[in-house]
Length: 163
Image 1 (cartoon, helix red, strand yellow):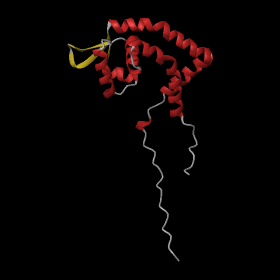
Image 2: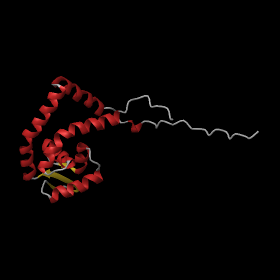
Image 3: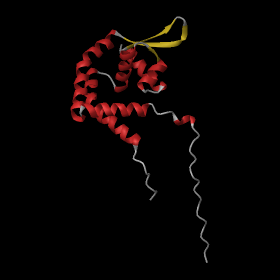
């Protein structure tokens, strides 16, 4: 049996926490007819206004190749509009359509209710503390600039010689 890892599994805990929180919101997203990824795009554009695709990918935590398909479906369903700016045809800008803006308005009360339900379970102070800790985690420096950690080389045991 391999040795146990000394640290608790933080990435797993964060994923499980996300799933617990999303259970509060998924029913409303389903009723609205949008996926979680589509809602993240709508929420980002609602909060920040029109953005370039790369900015949306970063803000919504959706990899660029995946976002391309998400935006195609959202444009087909009239949630977003993509356009190029005349000064730089390479840049694609995305904005919410009136239909998406109406959805945001309809969802405001439902979202607020869900946040109140979470707060009633955790308490206002604990929820504020959680947000503070998550902001610190999100502000951690990117370790990809550091030299990779070298793993120890496993040596094969010498073959046993028959006597």
